Image (tube, each protein chain N blue to C red):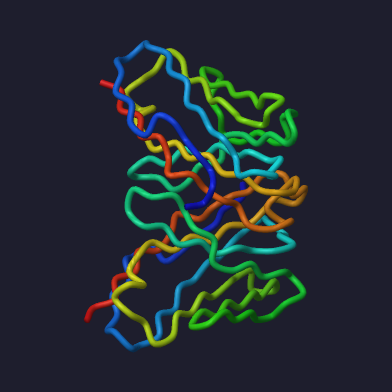
Length: 115
Length: 112
């Protein structure tokens, strides 16, 4: 158990809909990272927050947005969903501002299926 | 553009042998590199971190090397066991240390 909690574990929805994925980081970790993993692709970095502020942005679509709340949990909002958005979405947390400070702890992921 | 490449083919080895996985990168100058293990449908789990000033790092049956001239890291599992079967990912940061990128991973199967 990494200590990172993601909900929901599974989500099935239709194209055009909007979903919210939630992540609670490990106790004491200030950074939250979001990654997307499709079958034919590796882990794609989406966005990182540190102590409530956006710190780095990767290949995140404009239809996606995220935020980190004062209690440090984070939410990833996916809107106008397309079939290609079907993937495993992972949240990870770390103590410091980047992975160079140490390891990332990953949650078990939220599997999104868009029909 | 930045690129991280790992063995594209799945790796099958016999139990007891040493598995060697490769991570090559271009257009990065990372200060460190990390290796993770991922089982199907699970989140990656951290294994080892090696910094640019470290040539080699060991942890139990695992050994990682980091050659910044070749822009390559090698990950070795000695005395491999079927339980080592998984996908192994290398990861590194871009120069500002903000964006943390993963390679596509190498699938390892250890045959009993």
